[in-house]
Image 1 (tube, one colour):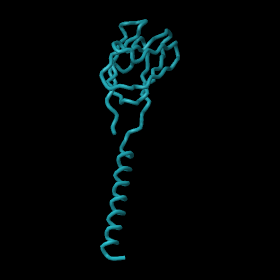
Image 2 (image 1 turned 90 degrees about the vertical axis):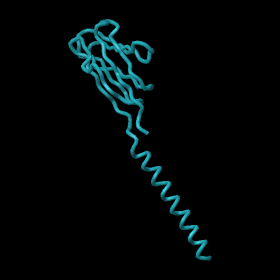
Image 3 (image 1 turned 60 degrees about the horizontal axis):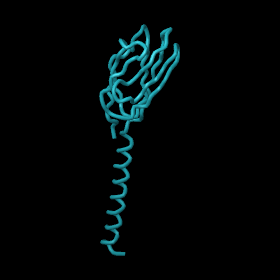
Length: 119
């Protein structure tokens, strides 16, 4: 084997190691989906505006003694009904600014700002 052939093998091996390291860095920096809790208490959503990421799960907890909903206002992306003491979840699948309200008590309003997930 000549010196030139060994150098080419070393170069190819180094390139493979670099490519694998870059690929691993890309997946290591991705943020896993989270669960974001929003409490309903005293006839209001505890977070009038909340930022979340695409892929996150939003969990509403009804601490009131009456039923409520968390209903997305315009696109019909989610509509959860919560009896007193219940928890319901929805996965955020689309980026955007989404107003939601309680269908049973329309004065209860809030907003989710859903941002694109980090890659």
